Image (cartoon, rainbow, N blue to C red; front, side, top):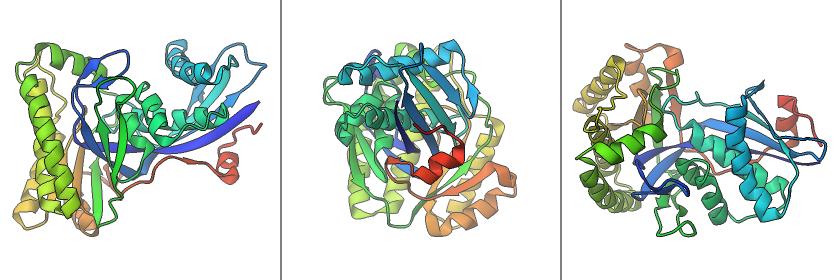
Length: 335
């Protein structure tokens, strides 16, 4: 048996990825940029075991359906092919992110799976190559290989679409997560993307302006201009959701409490607190802020949301191998 366990943190895009130009290889329509988050992550253990007749997939201690396991098997096949390996695997994953709720759980999930498969097969792929592998499980996973601010270069082919670390975000950067609804969303990101690309008249403008926004936010990060960075990020998110509303039929992830959170952030900004909203494909609201002001922002939001719905986080690190103690704590059988 060969085994490895890896932790990967989720990321929240500030310049959004929305729409694929190649469904098979997960090539995006536009480049994007994200912030990796410390408090939201996935731990995954991959064990290649000659005694197994089929792959097994356990999520949060529960064996998953054949349909879910097939997705994992196809992803592992990328590594098995590269390593000239045919052994089946047991995949055990603990997700510290609500699944399919618009909190980028797939990003940390497939980045962790990629990292563990890379080590367990003995491939020892470098981070750039690993980000290309992770991309084929979930587009946003390509960015979770790295910590801090990360760019996903859309590339021109499957071999040059990968993530690039931009900045470690160690300059008082934080985020307050407002978990409006932790339930799985009714319209998945993949379905929503495809529908928006194919039917929204606003979509071409979204792609065109996303490239301009990316260059502008990278310059703001370089200059550590938080206000400009926040303004660009908020505008990017609203434009993405605007393109969804233009789809046929329209796609709306906002819920009443999403609007309430946004209005609360607007009031804080009017009072001089620099904080900005971003939202992915789901109702949950993320507030980009100075980490030193996160507590104040959380207190204001707590007037409308309970403690369990609010989470303060700083920047997260890139993927790392779990320690023996961490693996043992999960009760995973060691090879």
